Length: 244
Image 1 (tube, rainbow, N blue to C red):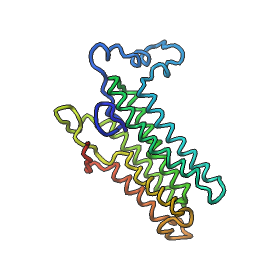
Image 2: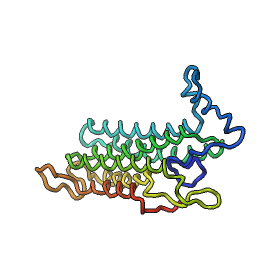
Image 3: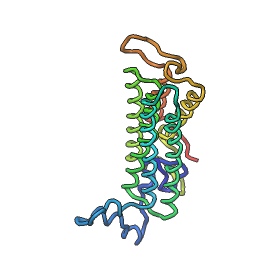
Image 4: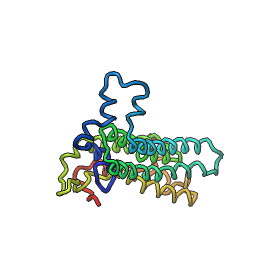
């Protein structure tokens, strides 16, 4: 999510608007991406500063996922890697907010920045929390299916936002009145809960509420329902979250 179009909360397509006037018509990124012969490293040269900050959001998400994977192969009882995995997520949120501030400060936003932002959000606030839950012990077939549903809900939510943001009612300043569905960074609330579990040693066989239907294809950890409920809230069209 991002707020590159001048809003207070981050979200994908909100920075799709471009600077007006001469600056907008002469935007370097637009020229490079539309040129038939842009030259070497045109993608890198086309980035705005805000786009590079958005990439740092994606970097945090990927590092969180890799740290969860390292936890899976680390000696039992060592939790350093899972703490690193959980710690990278709020850093991703920092970059997610900061890119919008930089875009507004420089008055530069773009459709490429919009897509970068949504993809980075999916990694940092969709895939990374799901991978962390898997690493902590939610690994039954049904757990995996429900965690996948959570990630796909985030994907669908971001895609819907990108194509419908113009239809949301706006105030006199042009700021949208609300989000449709929960913004995907709110998944950090579940990450915070998982951090509490790690601090208490409630991982692997000690995950709160244990497992149900053991020995069947429907074996699952009931707490994975938090991810399913959050996914439903993200794709809800009737849930309106006011923007600050």
